Length: 331
Image 1: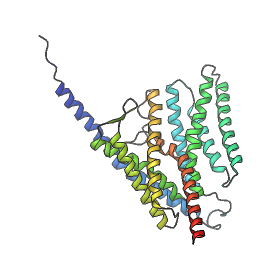
Image 2: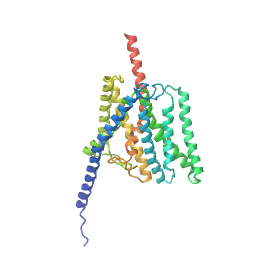
Image 3: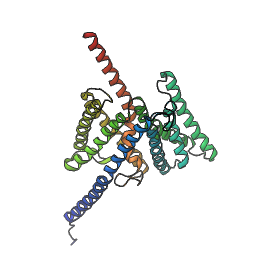
Image 4: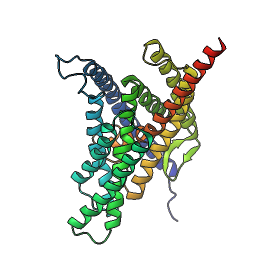
């Protein structure tokens, strides 16, 4: 007679194992999370301080580009993120060396950073398209130089992906910094990451209904709604603080609306990175950030949000200005 299988014991063991892993991840996030926040605030203050320096102190104000600290930080993040994207591509037999991935990322950020503020729409479009074409051609030239015949087109497409994903899209954060303020850029990041935090804790506490189980088994509908509520609250509070700090003067209701939208897009960015990693058979993009994974795991949400945030802020700004003009006419 066969022995009966004790499934309850196995289930209890698996539950204890999952709980131990969750507590370890939570410990690392609670440790490194505040450190990352403090570092971001310090860099924001330093960026604003350097931007306000007069000529005798460091550089002539006329020759010092705004947001120099942000540009450097984004460049570092782009290089580190491009290394991880290249690792994902190599897992799919798209052989792109780390150094070339870094060049593609920096090229994208420089295209955004060196384009003068106020450039005409047609000129800006031409610059962006030219950079995309240039990165694709460079990818093909790299394949030729490496004597890669099989998969040469995929190498070109992979370099293009890194250029856009870890370069141009990341560079939109620099545009927000240059055209508004460092604190507006921080507000965008706060909306996105607060959604991640709200989704994590809500999903852990009451999450039952899976969002997309085949792609991201831990994400739940309850976590998503909890994250969107959090990002909406942070968005409204952020706009109120910006208005009281004299940086921007927009209705906090717009902050709530944009916070929810940015939170939703950020979750899509997280799922996009999950799709890349699942396709490559990789759980985390890297291990450089304890409790979070790699740099890509940390910035996948803001990268997708940044272009949408740039245009959304411009639309809100135009609507606010139009409303102010109508009020003056009515008065």
